[in-house]
Image 1 (cartoon, rainbow, N blue to C red):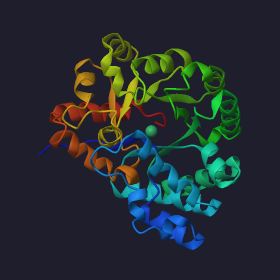
Image 2: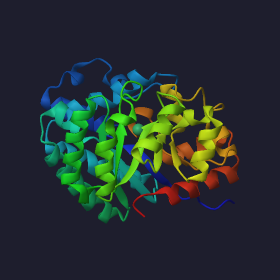
Image 3: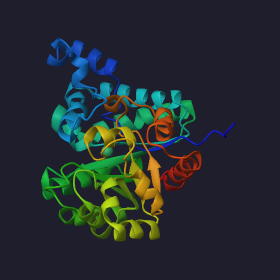
Image 4: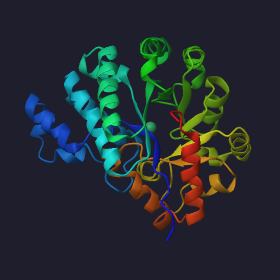
Length: 316
Ligand SMILES: [Zn+2]
């Protein structure tokens, strides 16, 4: 019998973790139009076959506008910790974007941060599950907004172990956000950057060179650039790979042809993550099994990946 591997999720979005039942319960309460649709679940959960990046992100985003009250965010964050505990996780890093939540709901971003931090502190203590929170800045509201979003995160910097950049990587390159991320590093926060998912290896180079990324969200397209893979391996920059999400968004061609094979061969540190448990309809324990049965990793490769996930955690 093989020893149980550590279950560490470094890349999980709160917005994509909110249970379908909770979104629909709140939609029912508030009279949100989602509750009146004949098949609301299809708006919240991706099909197993290729969904495409933008339709996939729509399924993440639609839940945000439904959670209109701070109590809803408190509930969603608490349930996300319960779900991670129920799946047997040893450590979780949960990320979310207070700026987008504020934008969609009209709530104050600072109040959302406090509500989420409060729920996470209470529930992670009860569950004895270490949880680190990562604050996201989005690219597509532009550089000026990013400065404001970062100022908001830094005003609550004790609530976060790291910051992240997400959104439209093809049209809003890393260079626009250099200032904002320099401030985060100066404040002592770790940096992970979504890159190499919707744009090519150049976007990963930019995240490393301009923003000081210590980890890369997804980053699977780094496999197109041998010199980049060498650089990531030499500098111990871990990629946060998500087998099912990458396949659904089209970042990876399929499970069997997932870039994780080339990345591991090149010695790039790789972690396995869920990205959005509700939208992708996955659990981390299940992704570990998928790595063997569908992707075709060997047991020893999966053990290496699990250890790399532990080593790359920011909140350890
Ligand atoms: Zn992500």
